[in-house]
Length: 297
Image: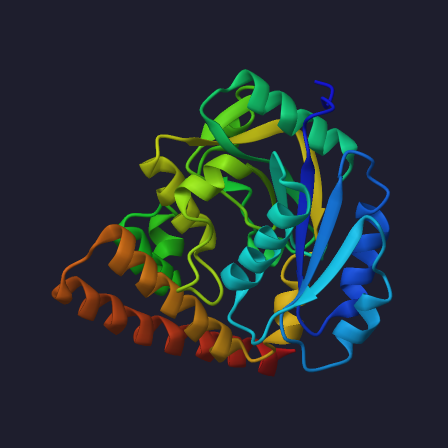
């Protein structure tokens, strides 16, 4: 599908203390002709990121900064608001700075929107060298039991991940309907994102994809995977740089999991207490295994 004259595509990329990765990303994204405007959001970096990134401003690139680092959702929302002010986009690309994609990715996504009238968000197959992190391209929206299994990784390894789609399903059609897609790179209709209330700023990091899935589902919209295109994700490079402490990353992830459980699954107090209990056990086991693995090296 060709892009019409009236179609405007904007891109938002979030930076926090990692201007080197963001500059590499801009060198790629700026040359994609289908993208009309790029907004770089410096999420209150503590290094010289804002100063360096400001030098990359052009007619196609705007760099803004936030008053504080309120997390992934709030930072991206700031960029989304700026895009709407600048170009009133038809579609918005949300991208991590550690991804790489091309024009074919965008063209195939536009074709999905054209064919699937209920489509609100689209992504492609994620490629990554970080196989140890088991990065997912798409998954089923997690229920309460899946949150418990997320806490107890050893048990989940035995039982299996109930949120997984089979590879056969994800490759079963050109455009495959899924519950959730990875937040590292996706394209969303501006009007649907606005109707859904944008990204939930109660979370700092993680669970954004599951929450957006709920919000889009609630307004009768769907998410699709374009199985014929892919993108590369240097998985968690930016996150690991900005939050090097593993225990802190686990805690932030669990706080977001609790927000998802409370607001979107509407769990009871007893279920909430059990979720916290299993997290404490899971965190202890995970960090213990990590220490033993490091000692064996």
